[in-house]
Image (tube, rainbow, N blue to C red):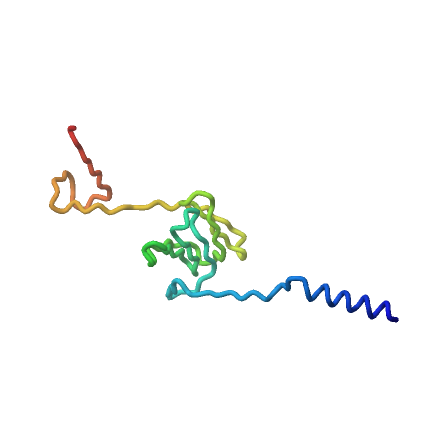
Length: 137
């Protein structure tokens, strides 16, 4: 009996001398609060980390992290309930578990060029603008 008590006291003494794993606390703070005005179904970051693709019923909201705002919306089938970005920054997939359907979507940026006050040829409402910059040196 004395051996059991001594062994128990030894174990208690050893465990008291070991570093104790303390309970860690996590601090957090909200960096941005995005008001969507629609129910988010899924969210995925772009491969470059510059945008968030937010899937809501019938559309993908494109949120620019540097600008801090929704910059564009892409209309999709309202049955899509999941979004996954691919390794390219301009390609993602949307899928529907109810319709058993998957689409691969490629996004292309369209840049508007203001040509007011500049010489131009063609109609003012042309769908394409070709801007030529030249330097003779």
